[in-house]
Image (cartoon, rainbow, N blue to C red; front, side, top):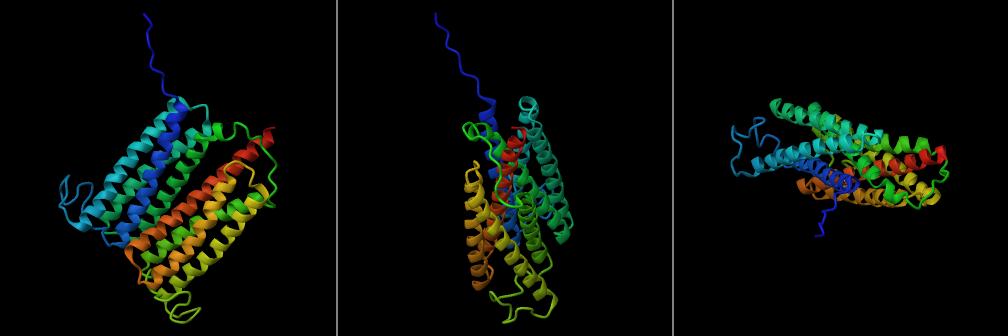
Length: 311
């Protein structure tokens, strides 16, 4: 009698799918958080960890918005914890993967704790700023894991090459640090009460440098956005031109450049139509996509450089 055997799942494939699902959940968490803030639903659940003292909260708009954010946070914690266990048990020899998974686990715990503190302190702006910062770092860690989980297949027939982009290391620092600072500056602007200060675009009240603290903060964010996004677009195009043959670089750079152009358009429309909550959420989501594209591009280039140096 022939005994049929069920093929065992490939740990690498499990890592690919789990890391992608975790990244989707992490991206959704930041996007939902943006909508919670823009729709003024932050106190839809005024207590923590329960909501109105209940596991199942009242079916009210602001409550459901905030509660959906909490539910996805719970899912994200389970996914990140499972991802860490998988990396620890099956990929411990790949130290960078295990390190990133451990980093993601530490970050998701900190983000969860800060989420509770945010509610208990009635939405203190500086806690929300740290909350978003750690959430974006979490997304960066998981994005790098996604890249590394696909490394074997992507690099199968792609020998490493010398990086041709001038001052490539410095450009990677500029683009990654710059985009992160830009995202955080947007959160600071909103937390300082200046998110809707300037109701015209590109000028504010017809002025390049309007007087008043709120107007100055808002325009400061615009100027910073213009400077960093132009630099990021230029750097992305330079990597496409000089090192587009490195696996993943051209794709990540194209997503980066097109997302920047779309972000500029969305930013202008957001002001023109009066700061619609949905567009505010899309604005943050696009910023996060730009951040993910940058991290993916950085991972591609550093992996290529590492293999080229060893060869």
